[in-house]
Image (tube, rainbow, N blue to C red; front, side):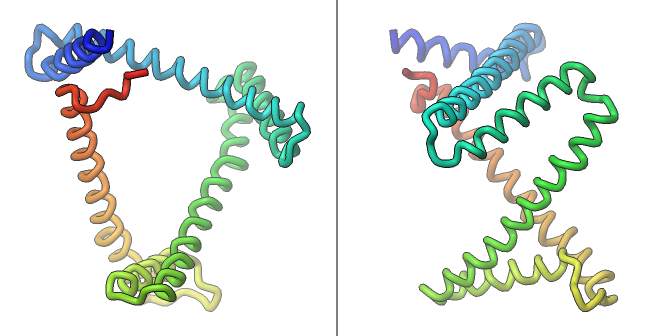
Amino acid sequence: MEIAAVIFAIGVGALILAGYFVPPLAALQSLFLSWAVILAGAAAVVGVFNLVLVHANRISNHEKGRGYSTILLISLLATFLFGLAMGPAHPLMQDAINAIVVPIESSLMALLAVSLLYASVRFLQRRADSMGIVFLVTAAVILLASATLPFGQSAFLNDFLRPWMQHVLALGGARGLLIGIGLGTLTTGLRVLLGANRPYRT
């Protein structure tokens, strides 16, 4: 049974890969990709139901943090009902996203930046080396170039340092991350096609 699963996975992966180079296989490739999108949507629905069950059990068992679970379930249900009744493009839904989701995302990103700076300081306390110093200086400069300063803005920050940080360092780092993700995805896909990795195995 396991050998059949390996053969099936390798065959489907090879057909999808060949669809980019062999035009007659493009229709079959599109069909398989459509099935994958449907399965991914079904997996997301299953994940939502699992989330509801986990937090419902936490509330029923009177576990610690059940208040947060209650808020989560009420928010989930309210968002689902409003989105189902009005649609995701309704102005009220867009206002809710802009008033709730966007500020939360911004707060999490700000917390991540401060946490990285704090982690770099703690790292230097344990082991002071050149890479730790580079990391600390980079995090401090990025915060200095991105945040609104309490003592006002300067022409050097606004006209030179901030654009340079955003368009040179940040963009270069983002491209490096995307290249690394692409190479990692390619390597993982090849290992699945060759049968070395078997994420579908139960």
